[in-house]
Image (tube, rainbow, N blue to C red; front, side):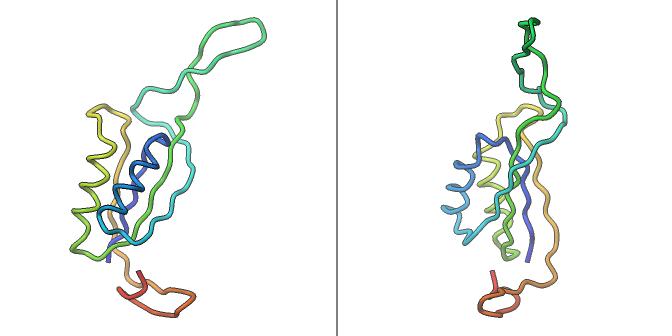
Length: 115
């Protein structure tokens, strides 16, 4: 089993969720996040008489996490890339790591049957 974790622009969450559903992913966890990186920072309106725009310290992000069986990893990565990639710095990152054990709390199933 693999954990696929994607840090993406918050505006892309619904599209990625739909793409994962279409790719056969049974479930995903979506977390609100903020971060900084190579991408352009959002511009925010300043107040108190300055009247200008300044760069926000952090970009609004979301983290999408899915645990999938090994054969499904490339399908999940492709779904995320096809939905989020614009070819620009700041589109996000995908991390893939091993999952040694999975346990469904409600059913107490373990391993691949838990996901």
